[in-house]
Image (cartoon, rainbow, N blue to C red; front, side, top):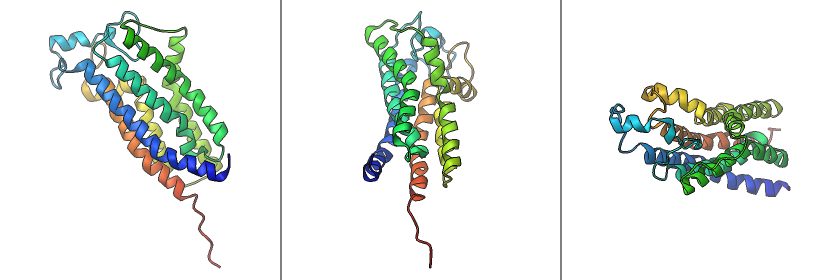
Amino acid sequence: MSRSATDAARTALQGLAPVLLSGSGVLMIMASRERWWPACRLGDFDAPDCLTLQDHRFDFLPPTEPWVPVGAAAQVGAGSMVLLSLALLFLPWLLGGAQRPVVTLLVGAVLVAPLLTLAVMTGRSGLSGRVVAGPGLEWVYWLWILTPIALLLMVFAFQIADPRPGIEWRLLVVGLVSVSTPLGEFFIAGALLGLSYDTTPWSEAVSGVFLVAAGLALWPAIRSRSAAQIAVPSPV
């Protein structure tokens, strides 16, 4: 890929990737609303209808047996994961791997594969009203949870190979994406909203808020690194 083509692609993705991340967060909040509203109002999680919805049977990321669909939560959640997959495909490149675009995009594709697989399973389940799952679902699920670790290692590797300002913003983006995974959601949603006997109400919305924040944080993360690429002539 030529330098001009790389710069053009990077410019396009600088505008698109934050929108994809934040859009994924908005859809996840909408999916959470499909499940919890109006049964679980803030401050009234002990209401009978809300207690019923807290059962894992209604979880949709991903649906597992026994599963009971609630509205279009699974379909909207799948849409959120598709947008997140597209953002994560290019995130390693934008966070420092632009000098090795082919390799970085291949790594991004490997990282995205588990999430996109879950998105397809979740979407098909939502459309059919029953669980549609392939083999190795547990492995796919855990690979999604561990994806941010790979992103974190890449950010540090890029910084060591080519030190530039703005690493605190890049680490913030990776951190926000990390806490949007089910593992981060479990601990943080429980801490913010209160623990449940099964699934914490509005926990998916907490993940959505973190993804919106990651999209907003990606702007300065990209700008700080791009600005460092502008050569400043040394005074004679």
